[in-house]
Length: 287
Image 1 (cartoon, rainbow, N blue to C red):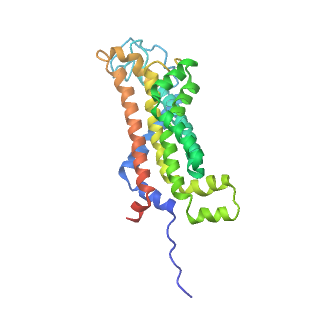
Image 2 (image 1 turned 135 degrees about the vertical axis):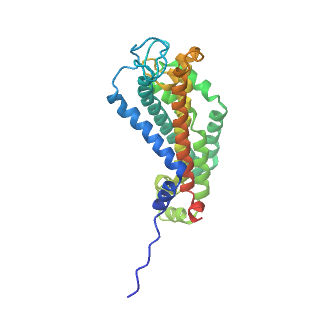
Image 3 (image 1 turned 180 degrees about the vertical axis):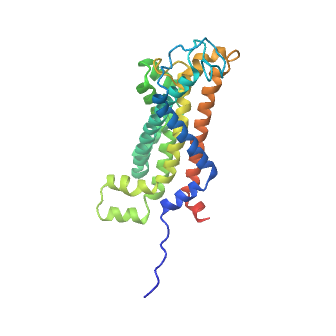
């Protein structure tokens, strides 16, 4: 009886092992999870309304009435941070998902069909790529009432081009391989080949792109909120900075704390993206 052979670990387990062994990626994951938990659970643990006036205007941090101080109206900065995080993360993740969905769909069709379909879709991508993204988003939000839906649609509709080009390149690289030809030979439909055969093999770089798109969407949302192009009835980190920017020299905490929250969140997302890039890279796994 021959001794049992050791099975090679699955690519998923190998990628997970590399990701966990990456200190930067692990730190980014813990930081992001902490921010998400605080933003979600903090709403119930700290149920105060962020628009309520709870202290004297511009109360400095570490005061009895306001742990992180108050803004120019007397609104508690800590409460605004907790409630604002939920809005910022929701818009960032949703807009990133919309952007990635559009980019993968158009890039997959362009890379798979090629020819005129590829030329047409890439001309559309080039149009959106040269279009001033922030200006276009400002116009879209201004034409409609500024709320979470319009802000999310505006961000997602202008930030999909890089994902589309990456998907197109991956599909063009994979579409002529033997296993794809075998699927065509047995009569598989184009939809099956695109979504169930090619896309899973092109998925690793797209996962990294989707992760980094979350950070870009968070910064985009903060920029729109900073300019007042967001829902005025919902607190967000960008709205905190925008409404207090005139008082940055006299009450630095009203701008510094939400700015740090945005910086730390985007940094954590970037660390996770770099960790995924290393973990999903077959050459690095072999090394």
